Length: 202
Image (cartoon, rainbow, N blue to C red):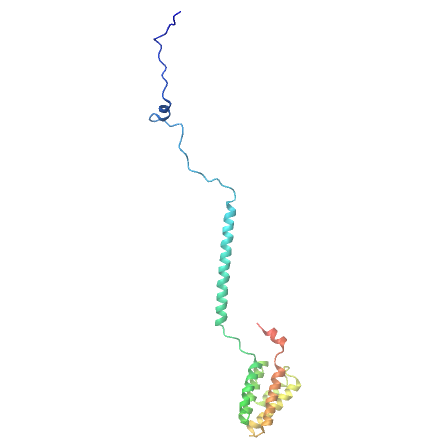
C-alpha cells in the first residue's frame, strides 16, 4: 500500500544553538552576570594582630625613653661638680703642706693653728676661726663632740701655738714637729668613722 505524505504540514525549524546563546534582545537582562571582585572573609583574629602591633609600639617607646633618660642622666653627671672632700681629708692635705714652713716657726704655728680651727668648725660646727683661744676653749667645755682627752690636747696645742705667735718664742724644730703630730693626732682621732661616712653618703 502506498504511503501517503502530508505535504501541507509546516516544517519544524530549530534555531542554531550558537545564535541562541549570543543573541540578546535589546533591553533584556542576560541570564548570566559577570564575575564579582573577591571579598575578604574575616577570620575573627584581627584583634590579635592589632594587639601585637600595640605591644611592639609600647616596647619601642619604652626602649627609646630608657635610652633618652640614660643619656640625660649621664650628661647631668658629667656637668654636676664633684662633691667637696670631707673636712678631715682637707685638714690632712693642708697639714702635709704646712710642713714646708717648719723652718719658719711663727708662720708654721699660725698655719697649723688655723688648719685645726677650720677643721673643728667644718667637722663639728664649732665657731673656732673667729674667736680667741680663751673664748674657743671656754665654749669647748660644754661641747660633747670631743672627749676630755681631746679637749686637753687641743688646749695644749693652741697654747703652744699662741706662745710662738704672740710671745715670739722660737722653739726648736723638734717641738714644732711635736705640734704637727698633735694636730695630726687630733684630726685622726676625731674624723668620722666608716659607719658615719656610710650613713652620711647620699
